[in-house]
Image 1 (cartoon, rainbow, N blue to C red):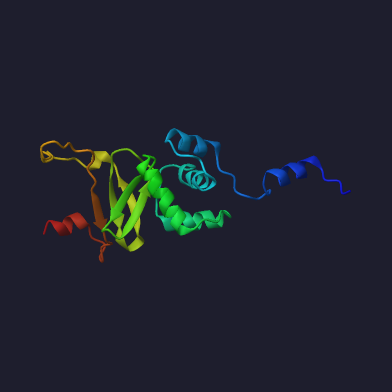
Image 2: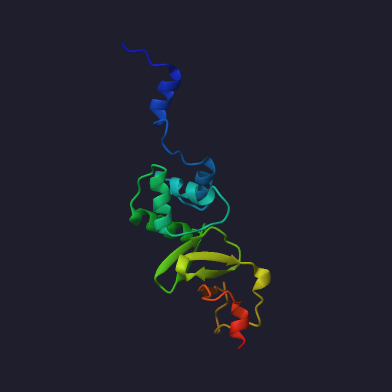
Length: 166
């Protein structure tokens, strides 16, 4: 019979030593949102919420998971991100009906979209003063205001504000 040291036996019985392990924080977050912490959900929640606030696409998350050795289909990632958004864990930001970004910052804020880089940038609320909003139709109330300002890089080094005032 082959002797296997305890530390190696534990590693083999639980998971391979180099395999990705979801965080306990991610599992707790899923349970608080009323979602069962499946392996896929826990892994994606770990990627999404381990850093500060982020904007990700399903493709971004698919590449990140693959690099960490977590094999998930792109369809599973899309479905999971949409479930997270429905559960209130993420905000879904759609750009021109073509691409969906998922934002981990649930606070009220708006976005710049840098078209050439396919990148969202948060606009601080202090920089986005609102005038009076229109009254909603009878029986409705305004739940949220989403504004995405699309940006393109200037061809010359001049300010975009200076050009727009001409």
